[in-house]
Length: 104
Image (cartoon, rainbow, N blue to C red; front, top):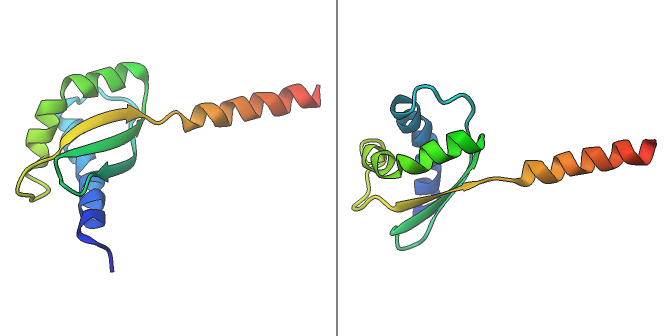
């Protein structure tokens, strides 16, 4: 059975697209990679795979996103979210380029 904090992480991860896309309708690419809320529920981190432009737009709407999130995830207080670009794909691209260089 999942703990309460794990359930909150999953709930927020599922709710974020429902909140972000109406606020930023021209958003082209977005993947919510992970959500990690601290045990006090005061703060949370959200890892995103998206373009830099989209990331900046999401960051600029952080307060609106948090306010709308409270409609989907019922908590005593909505955590202050910090958005982070998930750059693990950059490591993957570097590995692909290294493989190509090794083959030549």
